[in-house]
Length: 87
Image (tube, rainbow, N blue to C red):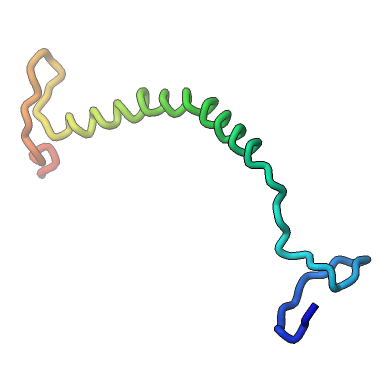
């Protein structure tokens, strides 16, 4: 190992200092990682869909209705823009 390049590698007690400790390479587990990622998205998707439908949908509807004149009766909402937010 050439120390003249000012590259200092971490050492582990009980091992010779010429054994490179860093960077450590990960073992190739591509298929396992792909399967775990697929299972993660498969198991989390019902929660994401439920969140978008039952939380995101009403929030979006309230945001859109805030720009209309809608009393909650059978009438069709009419767009009034920012008049609901004026003082």
